[in-house]
Image (cartoon, rainbow, N blue to C red; front, side, top):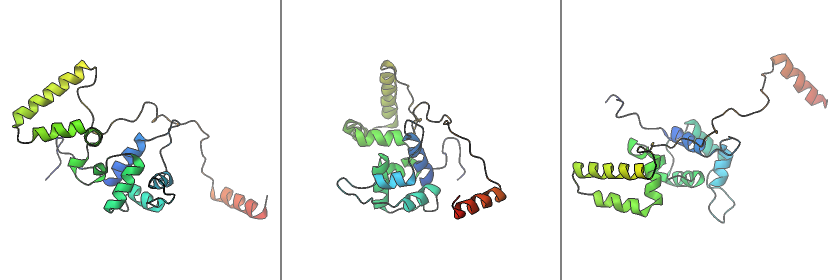
Length: 180
């Protein structure tokens, strides 16, 4: 089945992890490192993380794409995200909906109440919700993955790095070995 604009490819695990990291940048604009994520995977009261930074790195790079359920749970906890977002499949790509589902018991009740309703009834509920959002001054549409906070995608100040030539690198290595 070919992809259409209505049915995009599901996000890969590494794409989902990168989106979560982008949303968790610090005030200076730096994303958490693989080691930061691994360290954050420690359970409360435990010092040892449940994930190694190597595991996190291989998941981020896409070299490992089929983690165990305990790895998914640890990643979700470390990144403060719903574990379901890290599952494969288009139905799990909506971070905003999954976050509301996890954090708001009222939303779960609304979903349960929709069970058995006709499509037209559900569309009417959607219209009422959009109107409520408009009255509250909120956007009618909510993106599946929220945009990062303003300013985090700006280039950071810092010294630009220059790549050393082979000769310069050899000279520096020799100086280092000679203690200069």
